Image (cartoon, rainbow, N blue to C red; front, top):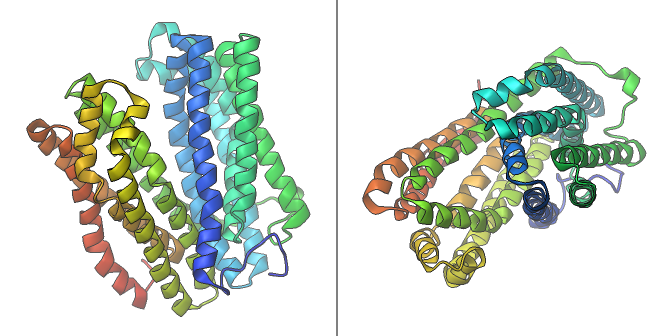
Length: 446
């Protein structure tokens, strides 16, 4: 089952090498995605106008929640696939693959069937400005048409990561981003199609990435390949996938909801603080990418070794993964602290905004190793299948952050957000570290 150059057996070989080689493509893909999102926004804003930009921005909030739900279920499926691959159970691996693809297609068509007639209702509930309503409806309906492509890409990308291949999905993601950007420029800037052109560009790019993943698996990864006429849902695996993925989806949705509340609190301080915090978050998004990528690598490595029944290697994977997380976090601390002024000046020349950002980084830049450690803990818990723990940990972290932000911002301004983040990260680590010791003896959760 493992004599295939397109998959990586993470149950043997140097653990640190596996974690690093798995993480680097993930990090590059995320960096490219961040850059693409920025270019996409600029093209729409410059060539389609403010109403179109508002329409697309509102649609993005809806799509983000849908994609978080899909990716959450895909994480659950990838953990199961990693267990089956590590244990050498090809029949169950294929059953899980067929089940996940089938569920993804059913979900896509349900979204399509409900979303197209209800698009206008969504926007009225969100109090979208009347002048942006028509554009938003057109954009969202076309995006719904492309929902099967979005699901298939996420499913196949998660499946490839479960068998140790993080490079192929990233290559196709980068290609998709390039296609999307070029089509945006052609359809929006040249042919002046506005949001219609932007939606078509996004849908075509998603279709290309999904199709390339499917072709790659059919040609090169027999461990995951099946004939589409044999699609079907295994009820036992479906329940387990939804149980695993449901907790992950809730976890992923909790974070942005909490961040919206925090952003709202910062907005009460005025435009200067809001702009400074927005810039600081973008800097953090890039700085913390290595920690998030290592976390995904830890999930795949731990899942495969759990499937192989090698608990000693699972523990080694945790320890070495956490060491890498700590090192990456400390590096971010040093870089951000030393370059905080220059980094803020990239986003604004306003000295008040820069000063507010410096106040924030003056505190938090010493503590970026903490979110890296929490990411490592989450990667480990996902790998062993402790999805309830990942959800509880995220809820702990975001709850303490939100509560502390609400209490501190009126008293000490934007610095309160920095202290609130530290409090949230510490609160999560304080109970997950001893809880992990319990799970070492009994990793099965009720």
